[in-house]
Length: 105
Image (cartoon, rainbow, N blue to C red):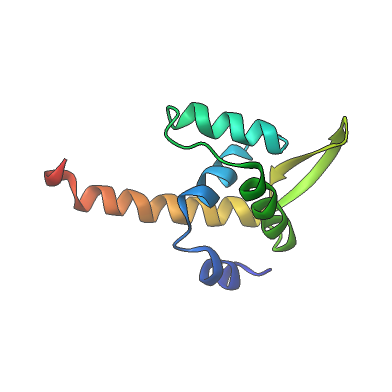
């Protein structure tokens, strides 16, 4: 998938998708993603297996992530260059939202 098409499809992205892509800046399998998201969100976000695995299928199909290996029948994924570009663009969008609401916090 090309960057422009990916931007139209993923930006703005759901918080779930954002955290899954963020987690895959390091190699992780589905359960590892669930644990990491729960940890970095301070327990606020608890992803279900169905949500994670359907999101992984979509992200892989669109070329934002790719499998690097399998361990104990678990696929281990990593973010692709396209996924990293989309994640960075979304992070900049979120940072702009934050800057524009600083007086509210």
